[in-house]
Length: 284
Image (cartoon, rainbow, N blue to C red):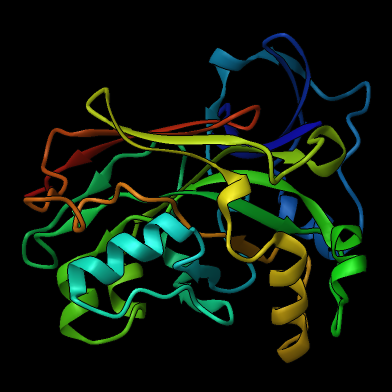
């Protein structure tokens, strides 16, 4: 099943995919996060309008996540190697998951414009990632039980301001610029994904492939990540985990490449959908 948040007739609604291009839309403004907090999924009733996808403007599935997006760094071996080579560091895979967060205000829609403000960053980089959405919270979740807590999966572009990231010697500011976490177009529920570790993922800039890999290349698996996070904190419904990116990011290229105003970035994951975001200048 695919579940989305979309604007319909001027207000955000919950949208549930039925077949083809047809979606069932909640009759009143809806909040998917409220359903998750209550431990339920929306069930379309007879009073839900049935509309074609073109009648909807898709937003991030959880436009207001309950807290920061949790992210994995260096979780693909080839990306770990390219990052370490670029920085002149010793080549080694991380021995434990590298975890950082993106501010909740960075979340943006799957087709939203991304503002590139040169007063903030001049080195905006792309990163296609598989997003995991928690449906049932908990603490001390074992790897064996991890999938019982997963609602589903989505596509994330972990856009990164590299100049901020490297200047401040940590990830948070460079990862948290408003609007730099495009997400969606929907959540595909876990029962519809046979194996989240066997999906092709790619990123294209202006139609040119920059990243291409498979989720099988993750260093730490989804169950390992959930076990690690929940050992420290209580996971809550609606938590979003970005599981890392493969090789091909801009800062590790020779010479480095960064996004510019007018560029279009498309991030795609097999069977989950495609994000397509245009880079724009700030409004005067």
